[in-house]
Image (cartoon, rainbow, N blue to C red):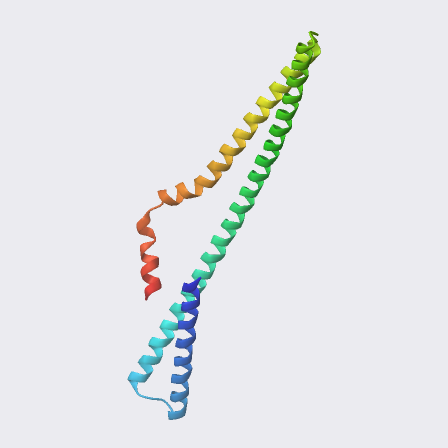
Length: 168
């Protein structure tokens, strides 16, 4: 962002110099060849800077759109993870209640098969919820790591010419 601001400042300064040069030319009725060449050089520099600003703005917008898309995807994954964790908590609560009822029945010496079945169903649900939470967590980690891995796999020398252009 600071590159864009700096380039805009430089463009404005170049435009001021061009306007000043045009004012001097119109006031003197022409000017010598050196002044004309300097004016043309300033116009070329101005056009180059304008193009660079346009390219940086486009790149900035593109990067911003990608970032928004990534953020929305991450938010959706976090919502799924949260839902899976809520299911896990509910299943674990049911499991604890079923196990407590089973322990109470065993302490009373009453063997109730429906309590055993209920405890087993609660345990199966807890295992499913735990698996779903693990999968959601893994998908969230993968989604967070993928852009970093892709960025690391890209050619680092491709960024150097851009940095050199920004210094000009």
